[in-house]
Length: 368
Image (cartoon, rainbow, N blue to C red; front, side, top):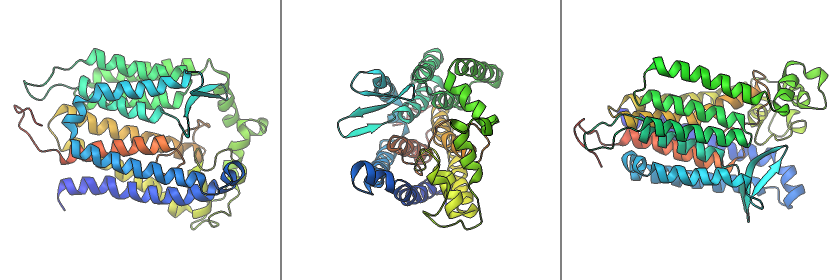
């Protein structure tokens, strides 16, 4: 198996397995709520299947277009994603719930556009923030790329959605690193970003409530401490207690989305949970190999940025479900019920595969 085929396999095979498992778990975990709300037990599962099919089509389209065409289209893609993220503030379109504006609802369609903006930010920073590989290419516009990245982060802060803000900030920094920005600048920038986001988050009461519930769940049984305790009570065995027979799903607010890894761990066992973690590790390795396989800074930045945009939410989701982090309300792409995250993941996987399959061009060639 050649290097390119290996990279595509490392991304596509785990993604397909996660998607298939996600349909099964979402169908089981949301059946009761789906029946009570819509009169059909497979309502959410059907939407998940539709999102996965759309994600696959997006991934194929990205591979067919090629990374260089996608990078040229990055500004337009970013503007569309930014418009969708800002739509959460529009009356009649945005959905205000639990003190935040994170969802849009248009006719029969609803979703959280945050993953789409994160993916688009990775593409834009790669296009504008990396050094040009050939004289004929446009010069890097790092200040503008950083400015657009900051705009995306501030959009999430305004909602507020600090998990999306932190993930997007990380994506920007990693894409800049892949594009040739030195560590002497990146390390202080990363530290300053973390401090600023922490200070901003501390101004919101719900954040301190989640931290308090995490540190002392016994004293917050009616708040976020309740779900922390529910996660602790979930017993993990090698093979699980059986799908649909777990305790956690009955005590968690959204077992099919924000806590789906906890459901998998309890009901399907530690082996299944380890397989899920291994699948994301393989995808991350595929993104790194794709980046290392190209000499073009923009393609390297695109592969790394897209890889982080896909893997970071999954890592945070696992950390929350394992009790390592406070409740932050982040879903796991493909495995959780989150159609927008599934489509965004399809775009990110397609971009990584496109970089891996892109024709190698000399450093003095323009490339198609």
